Length: 266
Image (cartoon, rainbow, N blue to C red; front, side):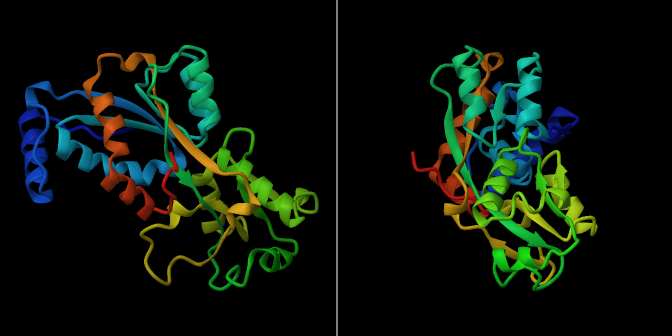
């Protein structure tokens, strides 16, 4: 679990105020009303959320406590009573299931991003020439994907391989990670020659240090619609509701796109 809260109250408030001034924002609610929301976030969105949480604190005075994992893992935790206020899923299905089960606050489910996948190799030029051509060079090497049973990015990866005609031939060469973060590790350490990861995982990597990528065309998989929802526990939590509005603001949506996502269409 990653805590994005500070220790002593006065230093924390000074830090937040200074950040707000530096970024040109004014504080929203008074610091006396500052609250904390506990956020369960799919692994692909962890890095963007860490960055955005600092801006959120500067704008509002509220803080976030973040836990990450595959969407399937987080969903299981929530259905077993994990104390989360906000769920940032990598799909639309699980937030909808929670809504249908009455485990969410009405009217709070919305799409915050559309995910994109890339075929990535740590080797320069390995996959740049195109996906099908790169996959044909795999030989006896391994290809990594997130486990489709728990990770929506794994579902998209499987769909891409199926539509390219490689899913069945590659069954003995597939390495399944529990989430895209583990897939990234498999490829980066050489345990897989290439694999499908979230485009957001490569955001900010130094030029020349990103290996080689092929951006998977969107027609090779169903849309990765990433929904968020406030859970029942968030009732009365000002930080959770402020965060819901924060992620829907135009400037924050633009920031999300800069991390390798597409903007939601609704």
